[in-house]
Length: 130
Image (tube, rainbow, N blue to C red):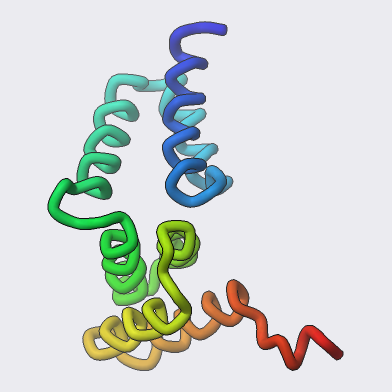
């Protein structure tokens, strides 16, 4: 295994630790970037992990904030941060409250997106029993 391969595995491991898996789009970006400009990829990923791991905030709060911010942007990455928030101990009620804050700044589009994400992560028990 080359040094670049080892670093790629480490970078993917950061996502696995935070979310539980490396999202396919991110994996492709990392793989390509490590072939083309590993220094840039490592610098960006180090910045990302530093921003998402502040000493002043716990991981659940960070992920709830990231979820809300990405909902405001109507970014599909909101789903990854919802999963990371759950992994960090967030409840459905906390995620829903974060979506409400996002809706204040983005409107119904953010709340609809949150509903779709959260319904997928927390299926209705009445519907799954059918």
